[in-house]
Image 1 (cartoon, helix red, strand yellow):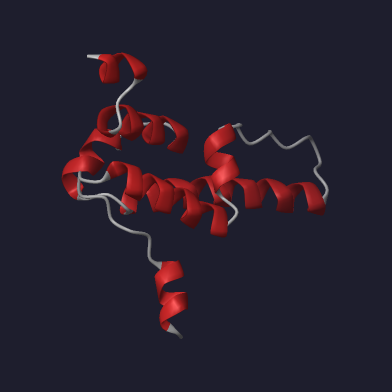
Image 2: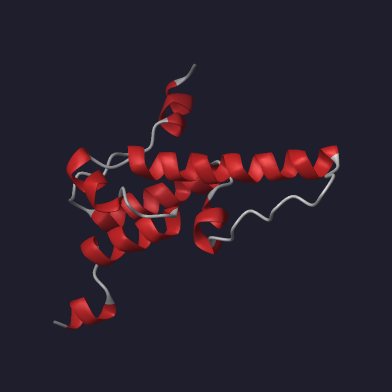
Length: 112
């Protein structure tokens, strides 16, 4: 394994400083694994129809796995003290937005 592969497999850990840099790197990391769109769109996985085909079952399983991966990546890319702030979030997008508002600030917070 080359050092480039090792870097791709390890997201940067956010410790509460330089949020803007972390968020850009995390977006790139998630894009590299084809997960960013899922975070951004936050669409629920469609329920399987009665008697699903193998292709429908496989697609549903892959979508569920992607949602689990993206959530795991975000949760594991922050230090424990920050994890406590997002652990109750129901979706990765909710966690992302919470971190964004807290560390980058909402429009209202920035105006203050």
